[in-house]
Amino acid sequence: MSRIGGPREEPCSAGATGDPPYRDKATALRALHVPGKPLVLPNVWDAASARLAVAAGFPAVATSSFATAAILGYDDGEAAPVGEVLAGAARVARAVHVPVTIDFERGYRLDPAELVERFAATGAVGLNLEDSDPSTGQLVEATEHAEFLAAVRAAATSLGVDLVINARIDAFLRRAGSPGEQLAAAIARGTQYLDAGADCVYPIGQADPAVVRAMVEAIPGPVNVGYGRQSDLSLADFAVLGVSRVSFGPTLQQHLYGKLGAALFAAVAADRDPFQVER
Image (cartoon, rainbow, N blue to C red):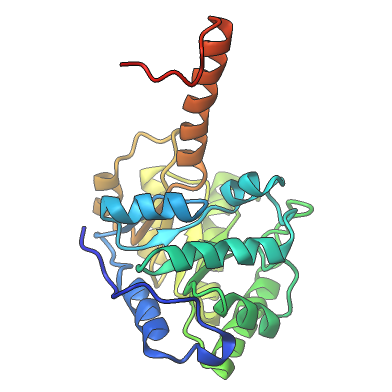
């Protein structure tokens, strides 16, 4: 994987969002969404994990809302104060030179213009916006969410901000009808969200190869899938299916913290010094 971007920049303010570095990062992020050669995003949660991802060679950095909420001491589902989430996004964007995209749930109830202005000030150039209500877990009507996406895109255009919008589709996650109805809803919603101004769509919660292929073939734009532990599909398999983006969500953080917790509990149970480095 090649790295992209130049020297690290400070987060841009709303008045500086038209500066070339910001536009270049958004353009670079959008260009990485290639069917059959997917952008792989090992979702991070802070500046340190973001730097690890970049050092490993990943060309862009994404966050996970679940993982970010965990380090802030809150549950997922927009429970964390939006100011803290935005501050965390700014720290990640400031820490790395590659494009940064943020899992922004459903926008934390911000008006589209305020959302764009405050989000752009972090220096991140992409964001996820999901189509279910974090407080209830219920799917939002497709037209309502499409109108929200269109309003965010219009606000970005008005403010001179180039945002890469990844529209998450929760039809599978929320089990909206039979499997066939979920697939039909994902395709219909994906098409509608792209028409509304999204750059990519993310039907989360589905890794069946036949279903993924059906979505890729029917949705007229880049498709993001989640790399889940319940799936036997490899990154190469997703590439063959024509996927444009692969996300890991909170999986890496959960794996890392699980290892840490197991080591600490084992040390205490064995009456050992948990901080003694084994040689």
